[in-house]
Length: 178
Length: 437
Image (cartoon, rainbow over all chains, first blue to last red; front, top):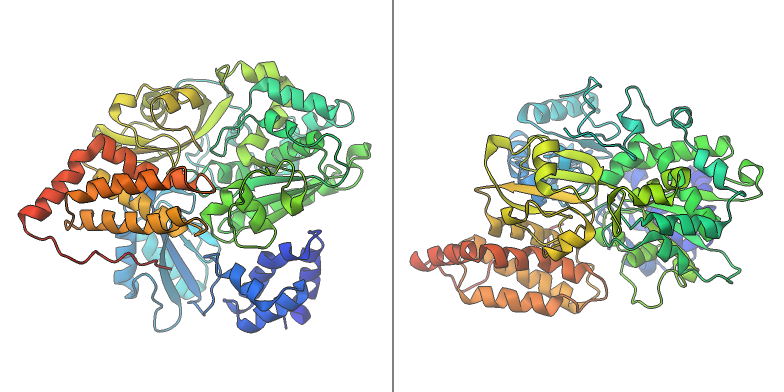
């Protein structure tokens, strides 16, 4: 039960809103963080917490693309394919990942480690091409960079190549990534 | 690069600036709040913002002070401020930088807006993918709360304001203000029919103002330096202040550039963004995000202000300038944007829901060289029957790429179709347009 595991966090979320239903999306995020996707059991429990019917939860969750209703790989790679990224090679990035991992958009590797999705604009057009893996952005991608990111994730579970607070272009006086 | 004063990006361009509360205060942060709270009447804050000429930076460009003025004066119950941080317009990535690099500038703006409209609760609706941004904002809210800028009895004035970060979950339409409110209420993000407007019936049916991140970030500066000062920058009287333009596409140095409104695209591309990569000439550009119609090299000297861009047949929108070099297929470019709109149509209004699917099917057929000449008329007809016939402005936005490329590059469409006809490749069945998850 989410309530046993995340009682304090759920209380904090509920305290932010004068109307309970507003806590729906934040609670669905708690559920997704717990299991990697939102289970039917979690949806029923959340409906109970918010005094909603399960269909009210279901009709909402199915509107939003960020919720997984079935398990995805440990690392969910989402490559932006919108025009701004496509102009500077996002289709090529998808091609690299396809050739390295052997999966196309919508597929998961046999070891359950990686799921690949081609998604719409993620608001990083100035540092295109880019992708998001779980919570992190990776920008200004090159084939070498993609190689390193995938290798880092496979071996260490994290990659130092992820983006920090966004600023592009960097001011000339600051030494940073090039 | 031409020199001009930076307003919004000034702090973050200083070496070593971290965006922490201490850094922000060191550069004069929260002085506008100290100077205003309990010392200037809320109505005078609104008057200063009106005088500044500040217009919404999210896309619609509505005058901010006027929007605030729509709130009922005599209403006694709660009022809300929503900061629209659902930055999802393809080509736009400025709010992310403002939030992640100088979060207190945004928070101070939110507090000033709350004071002006009498709100005690503010929600920052940030797009779900920006996990880092939401963490940075939450940390900054914690710092500001500890310092007495947020919470009960702010700076001893007896005023209370709470600010919460609310993450969206991946729906472009939630940047539309009434869809944002629906989403914040825990529902599907379907735009509401207006009227009533959020000013009277907004969040939980209470008077509500929804303002974009960049709009709010301007407020501390306007209150520090006065409405007249702001109104003297840019392209007065109708387009005042600076804009953080997001330059993307085939330029040497893409990124965010804060410049006074009224600069030309040519200046922005060649003097700021380093010119074109490979030094090819510009073939086309979008001046204000994916919803803005494409323009041609003939428009390179159009001033980037609300009126001039509208007169050229497009819109300044969210300030996302995407530049395409000679050699880029305009039919392909329009298809890419159409696929975006098809994916993001919320499904509430039939013309948009069904129309976007038909438009994508026809565009895919033409790009795959299986088009027919009559497709061009069908495209035009469909566009005319979507724009203006939907609850929100999404319908107008989704037809912009096709209508404008058909207008300026019709020959490209025709030549793809002629190739299909010449090779006798026309196939009877339409290429299926499946909604991919």
